[in-house]
Length: 321
Image (cartoon, rainbow, N blue to C red; front, side, top):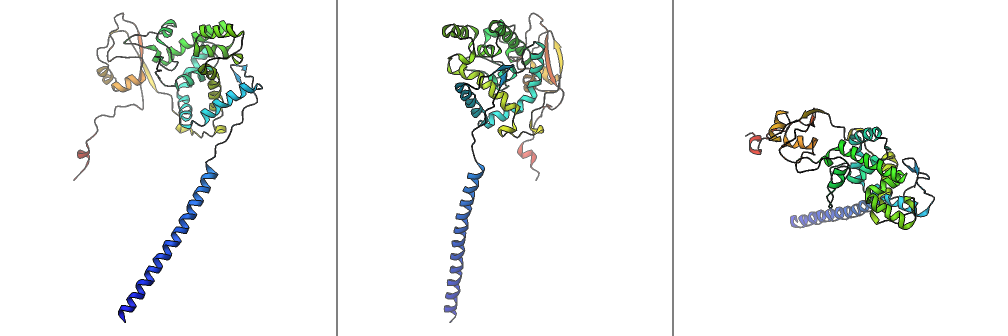
């Protein structure tokens, strides 16, 4: 009798387990369906509304032309849906645009050229495969031509303020030549000689009428897209809180006009470390500065937020028995 009762209990337990498995399978299938429905509802890719009118340096962009509108659309789409890169553009802009804007204004260069700097380097000291360096991506010869010191110890292409001054000089020369800021921007990518040859060959005086290489053909439109998106971030889906944006660096300046044998020791004397000294002064390319001509340089020394970390305790030291 007990054996029969035990068998009944076992069958009952197995039945309950089987029922629960069945219910779980149904619920799980429902969850998957609901999850898929949520994905379909939340993860949508939208085409963009192209502005009816647009300007670069107060020069009109002919968006009534189908070719021009579609090229602008392409760069808006590329930059809108390359979210990580564009988020970094937005974050870095609050640190570096005030620096660049001030110098552009002083030199009577339109503020829109800060977006040229943005698409050249992403507001970083980038290095191109061809050897262009810094925020404004100067080649060595061009940098020297426009007054930058470029050698093994000092490379002012990495100096944001001085390279911006050099870029202004170039752009003013190009504007004087072409009487167009749009053409000046295009020439920044392909050079004045190359642009002038294309204009002569094609009997064209407007950037938007020119058939150019792929890079330069997209170049101005990338600038336009950067301007549109950064000025209307929410419109393009970028939600960046004020606290998420990178703040301008706080620093003091010191002048040096003599050699420095070891920047690591020099940095320690300023209560920072070698890494931070180079972060604030990336144009210093060696661990030393011979400075044979006793040239005067200005170094930036951070005043907050960059205290050396020091020696971290080992894992074994941090574990208390």
